[in-house]
Each structure stands twice: as C-alpha cells, then as structure tokens.
Image (cartoon, rainbow, N blue to C red; front, side, top):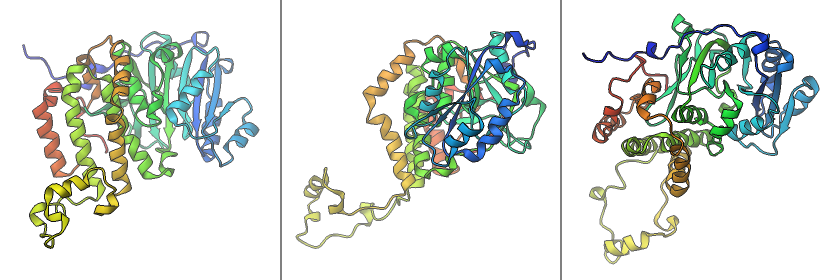
Length: 421
C-alpha cells in the first residue's frame, strides 16, 4: 500500500484541559528593548492586565543602550519591572540570555517583543501545554496590530535555513485555531521550560539577532524534545518595529549568515553534505543579484582590448603575479552595493571560522536524540525558492537535484503555497 501524502493535520495535537491557578508556574517574562519607548506603554499595560496570578509573574526588561528615554520611562511608570541596562546593543539573542539568567525562582521563561500587546489569557494559555507535559516550549498566535491578518501561527523553514511564519498575511481562519507541533517558537512570543533552556544553551549568542529562534527550536527537536503552537495564546505585533530603524546592510548580514549557521549546526552529517553545497551556491547567486556587479563587460576576456605594446598587461603571467595580494587601488576598484558586501561577509563568517563552527556543530551532534527524517516534516515548505530571478530558480532546481536535496524532502511539503518572501 502506498503511503498517503502528509498534511498539516499530521502535526495537530489534541487540545488539553484548562490549567487551574494553583497549577500555574512562576514565569519570568523577558522583554528586549532598543529605543522602543513608543511601544512600551501598550506592551506593559497589556501584560499587567492579564489574568495571570500576580505573585507568579515576574517581568524583566533588558535594555540595549537606548537613548530615547526608555529607561527613565520604565523606572518612573513601572517600578515593578526589573530593569537591566546594557552599556551597548548586545543583540537580541545575548539580551534574552541575560534576561533568562535573571529569572530567580521562575520555572518557566517567556519572551515577548516590546512591540507587542497581549490578550488577557496570553500567558496562561502559553504555559498550559508545558504544565500538562505536552512539550517543552510553546509559541503564540501572533496577529497583525489591527487584527485583520495573521503574523505567525507557528514556524517552518526551507532546506537552506530561511525561516517562515506559517499563516503570515492570511486572514483569520479556523485552521489557525488548532494546536500543533511546530519547528520553532517565534522569539517574539514564546515560553520554554527554564531548566531545559539552560541545558540547551538558550539562544545562540553568536547569532546576535534573527533566526536564533529557528536554531533553538530546531536544536530542541534534535535533542529529543517538542515545540508546540498554542493558538489560544494571542498577541498583536508591530512587525519589525525595531529592526526597520537599523541600517539595511547590518540586518541583511545576519539574515544571510544565520540560516547558514543553523544548517551547519543542526543537520546530520550525511544531510549536511547534500545541503551545504547548494546553500552556498544559492547564497553566492543572491549576492551577485543584489551586488550591482556586472556579469559581463568589462570582466570578460573576450571583450578585452589589447594593451599598448610594452605594457605589463601584455604578459599575462606577470600580471597575474602582480594581482596576488596586491592593494586593490593599484588595479582599479569596482563598485559594489553595501548589501552585496554584507552578503560576502555573512558567508565568510562561516567559511573563515571553520574550526570554530565545527566545534559548535559537534556540541549539538554529540547530544542528538532524534534523526533528521523525523524533523523534516516540520519544515512545512522545504523547497521554497525565495528569489524570482530565473537563473536563481534554475540553480535552485538543478543543484537540488544534483546533490540529492530534492530527494530528502520528496513529498514533505505540508503547506500549499510559498510564504511571503
């Protein structure tokens, strides 16, 4: 008998019973802030208006060197918030880990973006699956700020590490009201067993920001645990409320680098050998698309004009020798966009630190409890091609076939449309 095609229904979990107040754990909610003063009133007022027992709620704000008056605003208006102020912007992942280290007696950690407001039952519903022992981490149903569309109903990714938020931009629908297994919990609205968070190593500090939640969720599954989507835990989000204020190239660098790092750490050896060459090839093509570097003249030798007699450039071997390790100004400088440079640095962060990342990879692989084959269906859209460029699409299909990536994920597409890129 042929195996039936998998569907999202295969990941649904049975809703559990309500959790009584006496069963609710003490929770530390960690909020990162960077010049988000304009968000804080709605965020914190909604948090303190929840129906969660006040004696079991602890709020920690980690401020990444804001200069907009956020710190003074918090101290004046919400003295019950425990405030930790960094001398510089240490990033989302390290900031969350700092907040986690300040949890005291809390047995559960929750993380919430500063550009959120939460439903009264947000935290109660978020921690309920943990209390019932159904999983070790949960993520909320995240709505757009006006509530007209979904922002996230759990997460997945494509095979080379680009995370996706299931349901993004979709109108509300009953399918998004069903609890489900999910690859990762969005770092903007999630909860996790505190002791396990410590054992897993928390968010990877080296990611700084972006995809640290994909990596943590993926790592959670690799080490034998489960992450669930808790749709009754609802919040509303100003999408990219902080990152949109940062230089584009700085955000681009970590958005390109971190998916590579997550793949490098979490795939099994055999599968990494198939995925990594394709991931690097696709990264190179994306760099050329965005770099502004021409792919034809003046670099094609077929179009080059002969130099004047006696010029050094008439002796190809001598020219090549001079080009090696010489100052670029001597031979001319080609323009390249700042985001193109960011892409090159992003890939080089892996390639030029090979031994370091091999050690980081070994840390994960030595603790593996679950094989990749059991995790792949959680990707939801593994063969999602993010670029519309025809040559990129040809490379995506051809390299995936050549290295056997398409065979790894054959029949495992669980959502019927590509996410918004």
